[in-house]
Image (cartoon, rainbow, N blue to C red):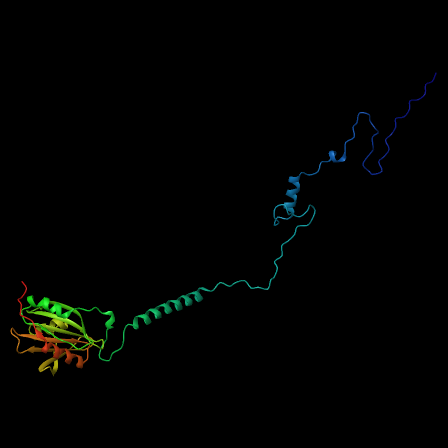
Length: 276
């Protein structure tokens, strides 16, 4: 007895999408959702992609996946950038500032001085004041000749007094005066010889240039120093022991005559002794 041929196995039908043959249903297979079969990129992967898409953008603001990278283009605002001054310009500016400071200092300094054809003048308000009468009285006991205390007109005042020995012999007592016009003149009383006294006050030997009569005496005139200032020297004929007067400074001849008369007429103090 002939048996029937076995049935042909069922062939899978082709998938119209081209994905390949589709297997028939299987009782043991479990359907898997598409989302689970192909998982999405994690949040970190997405962030990394965005950052790579736009490196210049802040974190979290990169371009979306698939978008072209953006290029930053500078915007012309029409304003020119500041220009740094050159070194030459800075040097000139610094020089001008320094010159301005020097000019201000020079102006302030020269305001305290004044020009005088007869010599420099001194601001009486800025010079010290000395009680010449009291200082002469203090010096008299140690002075081996009679000191004269001059009386000067209003506006004159003394600003220095000093005493000391004279090289070659003798002693000197000096009083500096400021005239009412601001000029300076010094009275020196000494028992030294004329030659030694002039050398001590002028800083070295000098040559006389003439004589002048004032206060009843004949004064020998010298010209000393870089300013060619006058120096008058006269002996006091009635002095015992012998002594002489010397005048020098930047004051005028009229001021010299005023001081010469005041010194000759001045009250003599008692003779002291030479300090040991």
